[in-house]
Length: 94
Image (cartoon, rainbow, N blue to C red):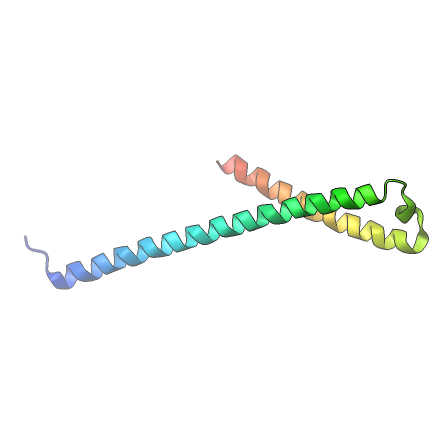
């Protein structure tokens, strides 16, 4: 049986397009995964730096600054917890 070129050429173009699309999405996934890991590392460094600054708990005990300090610390911890939960889920999938 002879396959017509009118059928074969669109199929080849479709296969090439699908391979390109999958490769493109995979590269974007890798980029964003690396970006999120960098964000996680930055947040961990920020949290460590903020904690080191307030070893004497001078900011936490101050009434005006303490509220803002607690909110900043809470926000960083929530983001860190979200990132760790996401990484654990991804490791379980593997």
